[in-house]
Amino acid sequence: MTIAIMQPYFLPYIGYLQLMNAVDTFIFYDDVAFINRGWINRNRILVNGKDHLITVPLKDASQNRLIADIDLSDDPKWRSKLLQTIGQSYRKAPFYTTVYPLLEKIVNLEVRTIADLIRGSFVFINDYLGIQTKIIPSSDRYHNSDLKAQERILDICRQEKADRYINPIGGMELYDRQRFTDAGIELFFIQSKRVEYPQFQNDFVPWLSIADVLMFNDVPTVQKMLGEFELV
Image 1 (cartoon, one colour):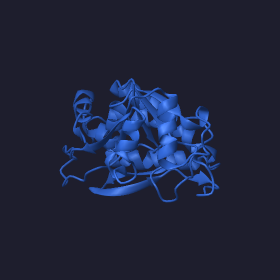
Image 2 (cartoon, helix red, strand yellow; image 1 turned 180 degrees about the horizontal axis):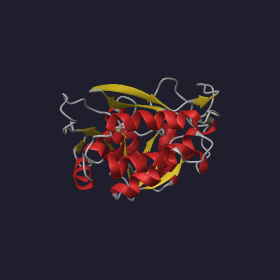
Image 3 (cartoon, helix red, strand yellow; image 1 turned 60 degrees about the vertical axis):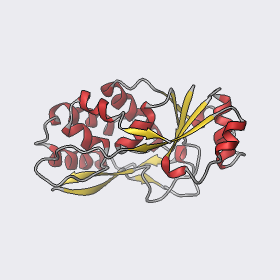
């Protein structure tokens, strides 16, 4: 059993999807503190040839609250504004007619929290791409918030009976490989290769939201991109 554990991100870059696709079970780490100005409720798309930040507005968001407890804004206008931005930006993209309705379903999901919105988004994204990874919110199952950092990750691995754990490359300094080995768990880090594709006639802007990837590439091409990484 191979697992990964990541905070839920809204329409994340393809490296997030590569990690999700590489494991059997993906844990949405949503019972940890919200990060202001992070990627939980924000991402980047292409607007007029440049990267542009999109944001899902939240209600009373604070780093003193858990991600799972953060509600979406009560103002319904944010949904139509976000979809308008996406629509205007990608209307001439080759896969707009297929992908825009998918994004429309995601943005219009009738859910209360940002965690539920993101979890729901992957029902649509994973079905579209054929990703069969099981997704579990950490707030639903593990009840180990008394543990910190690496020890909490190890405990989740034990509870899932995982023998392999994959983490983003940025966490190499945070984990002790020997500690995992002693627990009977192989530890790997995923290093995404640069994925490049035509974006209209513009110079390529890398690492944008998966929404950008889907607008410019068909499903078989994206599926191939999901394997463009190394484990170290």
